[in-house]
Length: 239
Ligand code: DC
Image (cartoon, rainbow, N blue to C red; front, top):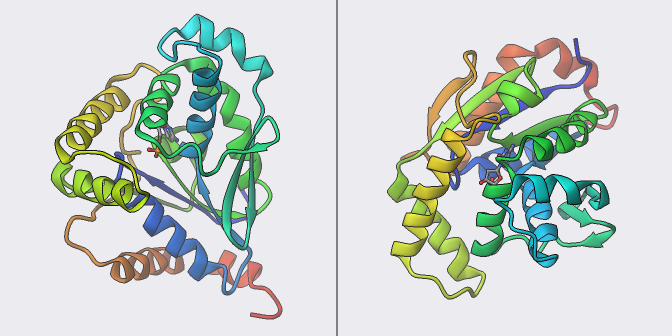
């Protein structure tokens, strides 16, 4: 039994996990201490480390050999999550198509998954979390209070990712974004180590046609339904 509230949001890339998770964490944080944890950022940071050192991210033995020199930490503040790679703030550097692909490759290496497991669990041991990823409900937090498996059509997701990248000033075309996304889905679903799949007790949620606020309210209702005692026990005095 864990003392804090654990909410696991899994699903394919660009299904809207971070928007839902971030929004729900912010709403919960009005009354309890709660943070949003983007676990993809951990894999992205490892991918960035390997890329910078010229290590082929698909070369599992080489990636594993370099791992002892890697340190990845997440900090949670008012501005959101900060990702530190060997002490350097790489939050803004890990959101490129190149690092998306590197992250997908290193995430298939079992040693990388084992390496990042404690980082993820120890956060959930110290504060209530809304954690998004691919294996949160199945591997990282198997006893999470609420598990959601979020989906949306590949077209909807590619449109979302394309818009995000354009807004960041990157030069990309929609077809490439779409095919990269489908390729990454396939890699995430078919890898041997913790493949992307819904936990048996996850609630499936199709995010294609749902508004942001509506999705967040739906999730908060599930939390109220599943853990009213914890919500009451964890309530801050000032809330
Ligand atoms: O969510 P994202 O796009 O930032 O994730 C980057 C890559 O990391 C993605 O290809 C899948 C992988 N990942 C994973 O395997 N397990 C997680 N919990 C989170 C991300």
